[in-house]
Length: 108
Length: 114
Image (cartoon, rainbow over all chains, first blue to last red; front, side, top):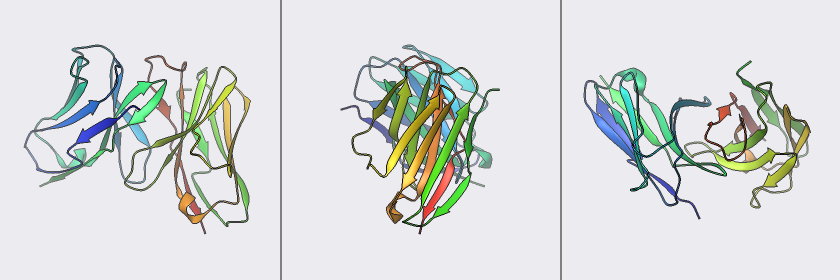
């Protein structure tokens, strides 16, 4: 059975600091997605990673994919309060399977 | 149109009620999905409709029944729900099943069963 594991599950950061969220998955896949979810809201697509070595950046967020290690990372640079949200990685094997989510809080 | 539209946004229903959630997309996507998300948990797949075939997560109770009137609509009929069914119900669509195009999610229906 496919397992998608994220860590950490909870992350409290100071503004201006850097940190990385990790996503490991248990089956062969070259499709990995990152979503953001604000409280009470739906899922917002952040990144779609479709090949080994893929790296994508948007603002203060950068995502990468290593299909051989079955690992994706979401790197946060110089965090700001607006980044506070829950971040999910997901693997697409016939259907989308989500990690447990990382609840990020950025404090002033 | 690049959206998945879900109605209603909020629904409160009693355990003896029958209600329906509606999901619509006009992007020509051929696969549609229903997910259930409990508070502080990831979304969990309930149903997939693709190529005119419905796939069901076997753990989903029969009080939830999907209906696909056409390729743009995927309804979720609710009957005799339990309080533990209270959750955010998310609909999503993708161009095809099992292809690397990603999903488009609707804004969700917040369901409360009383």
